Image (tube, rainbow, N blue to C red; front, side, top):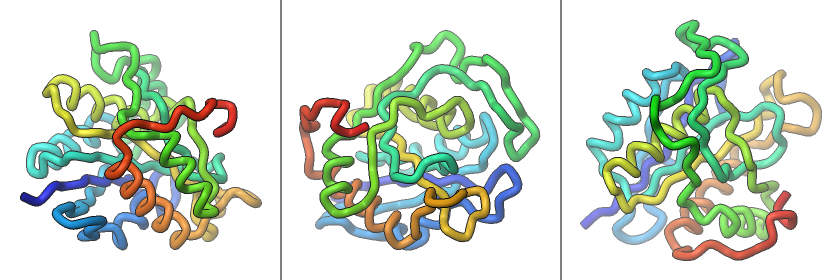
Length: 216
């Protein structure tokens, strides 16, 4: 029986013409990290609400055993493995449909937060050992990335799913002017890091007990 991994990325937003989380999906689509495991990818709109509707379709069709959500974080210089999603939409800028929720719940009445079920410290350690800048992040923000991260975890919890899931933020690509000096990462490095993240998640049942400060 084929086991499925789902990796999601976003369309460009905030006037950008490219989004690294979308570009990395192309070389990852159809990848088979090991026997019986098939990677599927899904493009999400950078729109509150609509992104979760598209995600719902993908989860229903694929029933993945592992889900990695990806997004862009222009202020970061490393692959950030997110620890926690919070139940807040608080948009600094409008999304691609002009929506800008302020201090609203992702899921009214839902839990305050969900923790990633990925082996986040094992992933960061594996990436660093491979020479890829990476770190554990304690916030996924309050824009559409966190919206999708929280929505994903809430859906899996409601379904009592055994799937493991989480979210990773990627730096900008070198060609993006918003990246700033020294904060960009090449596409090839990102793809290599994400392959390693998937392989680590598939092979690690229990996360490493490494002091958090060592990964900041």
